[in-house]
Structures are given as structure tokens and as C-alpha cells.
Image (cartoon, rainbow, N blue to C red):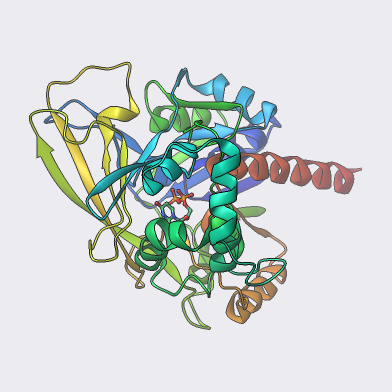
Length: 372
Ligand code: UDP
């Protein structure tokens, strides 16, 4: 069978690999000049630091199979993500943990006391929580919500947190101990040679062809028996119903001759600060040493048709436009929409790989049944 894949990010790289292993001829078309999608990494010429070109990517998962899978294509170095947050001129530990609460209250509370402190300040707005704000008020209470989440979230998503679903807030743990690991998963790490090298190894197979600077769209379907599309689902249909809402990021680079902030990510939670966070990429590779450093300020805004979409925006009230595009997608039996943009879901890397593995397996089973 001749399979076409639009995009050379994680989703398509995994599907390409799996189907090539099953004997299919696979063509990957990537419009950018590199593979790796938004987890693309490259060495910075000036500092030698490995840059996460489209923002930081930390691999974390509880899925043993996915962890084993990525370790086949890259050497992962242990990395524990510890984020700091700047609020009103002070630096705090994130995610919200006992240290954050004690820093915020200027106290030395025990876990039990901190729980009581938060409970006194929390309100059960809606039960079960449906919005980001409901979830925040329930889990961290009013004072911490105002300080750490309200302003940051308005900057990041461009809308009131009352309109965002609770699932966005639920991404972050809240802890009544001093564990400041940003993620709660058992496996966490960063590939020593970067994500692009890992994806390039996935695609390195005699039955996989990769064309960079090449876009595969609706008009090319006739060349393939099946197409996997990892671009924006609305773009596939020429945005004929209108554009789905995405957030894009602008990065402002800051070069320095030494360590700038002492950590990989410093969130800026005050709404008056126009950017959401500063990332210092040397800290994503603590096993390397560099004399020079480079940071990026991240500015979030609504994506226009020419911008790179990063985050699909979901609302509590749902999205009828998305439903209409999904209905159109169901009428395309020879196209499967995959990845964060193809499925319009806020997928982390491990979930993207899990879905890609499942998708490839389901495709193969369907083909085997049809052949029988
Ligand atoms: N968030 C926040 N303040 C912070 C960190 C996160 O309000 O200091 C909110 C924000 O709405 C963000 C969401 O929590 O989109 C999920 O955070 P996460 O770190 O998972 O975002 P990502 O790294 O995917 O941008």
C-alpha cells in the first residue's frame, strides 16, 4: 500500500515507522525544513546550547510501553522539571506545593495546617467543577488562584478562566508536601541528542521517504491509498467553515554571557507583565556545560491563518465549528487525522505517541481483515 503522511512531528513519525515495519511504502511530506514538528531541537550557534525551537518539551509519562518505545530511538537523560513562578516581585515554587503555600502565607505550616488554610479560602463554585476557575477555586482557593493562575491564564489563553474547561487547570497537581516536581509521572527525561535526532531515527527506514519543504493536502489524496494528516484539521478543509481557535507563541530572544535566571522555566504570573514565562534552555540539559546562555520570553496571542498554531483553544461551552469539521473528517474514509492539530486536542508528547501507536495498529488490523 502507498501511504502518505502530512507532517514529520511525533504523531506521523511513529505511524510512518510502524507501517513501514509492516511492509507499507510510506511517504512523509513536511512543509518545514526539518523533522520533529513542534518538539524540534537544534544547537544554538552562539552558545552551543540545545534549543527547543518551538518552546520547551519535557518528556514525561506513566505509560511503560511509550517510555520503552522512545528509548529505542534516543538516549534519555534523567531530568526533573522544577518550575519557578514570579508573582508581585517574589519568586515561588511551582506547582502549588507546601513550600509555595508557606512562601505565600509567610508561614511554616504543616501539611494539615496548609490544607485547612487552603480550604478556608476555597469555594465550591460549581460541583462538579466545569470551568478552569471552578477547578482552581476548589483545589487551591481564591488567594492562590488570583496570584498564580488568573493573570497567567488570561495571558496564555486570551479569555476569562471562567470560559476555559476545568481540564486545563487539572493538568497541574496541587500538593501538601514539599515535592516540587512539575510532573507526577514515573518516567521523565530529555533525549541527550535532542528530539529532532530522535524523530529522524524513527523515520530512518528503507521503506520511508521524507520530503522536506513539501506540503501534502486534500488535492494529493489521489496519489495514496491512505493519508495520515497531522496539520490543523480546519486547514485540511481549506478553512471553508472558518478558522478554529488556536493560540500561537512569539519568542523574544535574550542572549547572555552567564546564567540568567538559574532555572529552566520562570513563569510570570502577573497580568501586567506582557509575557507568560522565560525559558532558559541550557537548564534543560543539566549534563552539559556552556559559558554562554540564551533565554526566550514567551508571548501568547490568537493565531491568525499564517501563524504557527500551538494550542487548540477549548471552551466549557464546546465548539460547534469543531464538530462540523469532525463530521467532514468522518466523510473522508481514506484520511486519518492525528496529533495535536489533526485532532484539535491538548495532547502531551506521550499521549501523542500512544494515540499514534494505537492508530497504526488499528489501521493494520483493518487492512489485514480487508485482505482476508
Ligand atoms: N497556569 C497558570 N499559571 C502558571 C502555570 C500554569 O495559570 O504559573 C495555567 C495556564 O492556564 C496553563 C495551564 O495552567 O495553560 C496548564 O499549565 P501547563 O504548565 O501544563 O501549560 P503548558 O506547559 O502546556 O503551556
